[in-house]
Image (cartoon, rainbow, N blue to C red):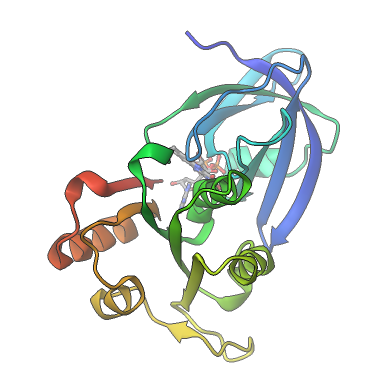
Length: 238
Ligand SMILES: Cc1cc2nc3c(=O)[nH]c(=O)nc-3n(C[C@H](O)[C@H](O)[C@H](O)COP(=O)(O)OP(=O)(O)OC[C@H]3O[C@@H](n4cnc5c(N)ncnc54)[C@H](O)[C@@H]3O)c2cc1C
């Protein structure tokens, strides 16, 4: 069984409203060895301040090519995340893992298409950053859907990466545009037409999809209709 290790919150970044990135580092400098896309179980401490309590799964949104810290990009919802929102910098937390088969494996991928909805960008950000850090010779397309334009997580960072390297293209869509927030880009879901336009021929491409169960299922159905290889479609949903 994988043990829960003691970590410390070393940084907290407000990404967009209700979404934060928690940077956590192991106290014993024993880094978690993970493949881009995997997740860990994050434990809060019980009231005694010593033993590990409740836990939830969080994808690692950073690249493994870094120091021993990892980033977890989290949207606040219910009990657990509301408790986490009250935990400050320097506080201890528990981390157990890594887990999961939603993995970016260099030798399997020549052309990558990432499709994310909302906070589903978390594991995909880790994969994209990894490709950049390792200077992999991979063409990358990101299709990123959000309800509103001001909910797009990592917007500036993704745009900078796309400017830096022509092998990475990013396309956003907003499904519930708000007239008070300026948005000149696409609106509506990623349907068959948008996917064909941005992805082109799907045959040789590897797909990584992360979002709600409904969104991931819809996208998988479209990709299958377009002729994507089912063996090259990986998905994570929560
Ligand atoms: C493999 C995996 C990876 C994950 N990675 C991430 C990640 O990177 N970032 C992240 O923010 N979350 C991620 N999650 C979800 C996370 O584990 C928690 O479920 C989430 O943070 C909600 O926890 P909570 O305690 O706040 O809500 P809970 O107390 O567990 O639930 C409170 C209420 O909110 C509802 N609820 C919970 N989640 C949702 C939702 N997504 N949409 C609508 N209602 C919801 C529940 O039905 C419940 O009624 C991941 C889950 C899995 C399984």
